[in-house]
Image (cartoon, rainbow, N blue to C red; front, side, top):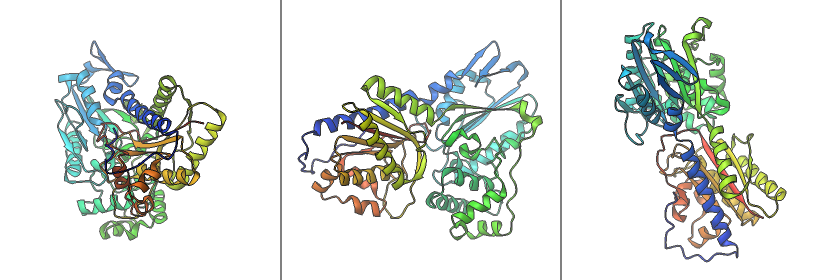
Length: 461
């Protein structure tokens, strides 16, 4: 998981507890790896489906396939490929048509469904082409005896896109996404803006097939399992309003960074309201959550307790917030947990996404910056017997090739021995170069999953 430590670092441990520190560091990495294995998307999705005598049980409901003439499967997001494989394993040649759009094929590609590689974190040509193809499929096959299975996962906001106004270009959408990612907004705010500028978000994709039966399955990368914001809600309208849209635009001064064509639409009050849910449609529209960050945290807690004998606390309130503030609060909670369980190894877990605006031209991401800031604070405190890991369940962190990073009580000492400045790398948003030099960048690559980030903090008395 970690890249090899460069041999050019001539470093002698500064503490007599170095072996204990390395054991904590290894344990943190193993907890993360085993958690990823425990939340395997294909296995979870396969377990949520069964076909017996033409009756499909899926997500807790049952559908009589004798009344279905066509089955369309449309997958969107980082985790939709393993979900699609699970659907194909159950339905086989009953699938009539469909497509999946993702950022990378992890494992085998679906056998019956074409795969489009959309852009992330900004849309590309295939993002637009796949959205147009999905709309055409839904409109062409819309009928009372059509079943549409939507596989909705995180990351789909950029990968699957079509502008609300035909005058808007791909370059316009890319600029909008870059502005949103770098403005400091949380994911729900970013997705709210994306929905209002899109022809396929906020329920608009599902609206293309009003007569068909819809079942949406979700792997969630958002807070509180608000399914309307996963991939910006292509099948489930939200209760956000045009006024909410304008509030976010004003709060982050987005008109200053949006392209002129987009700004003109906004200034002209030409942004249309989102679709609303009609009670009459409820019986033909169902939505099922299969996997989320909470599930990942519970798996990590079980692994830390059962396999490593640790006292575990899940910090359910530490989800989103400024990266520096979140780092300090996490270390304070870890210190308090250690004080309550003297003589024992302790584990503090949290999930979500810290807010980490980009300031410099380097490579990194929110996970690596969280760990870099933690390393600086740990050094200032003189705390040695601990390890701090933060990484994404999707295998990707920001604009870097890493998934996250890990630090310990010796990180800054090793950096100084290698003449690597943590402060300089922090200023340049270049956390990847810092951890790559020390061999502490977590290198996994796309996982085929996406249930937000995991933060694993371990300590001993």
